[in-house]
Image 1: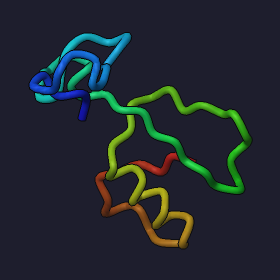
Image 2: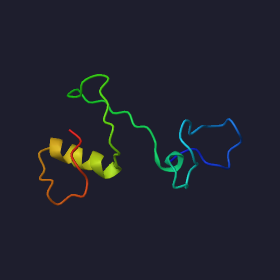
Image 3: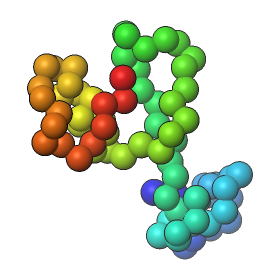
Length: 76
């Protein structure tokens, strides 16, 4: 996650957040995500932090699975 510190200046950017890949600052742990799904309203935003576990839980819930045994949360 994030732009690595070892790349030449200008090769990538974590702006406007501070830090680089492997830092415990936002620039090292935050990455944008874009999701397209017909049931989502165009232009909507989910402002809470999300893990890949949440994408798995959401997909399984949409498929009708029971989520009680999963660590992720349903994003819908």
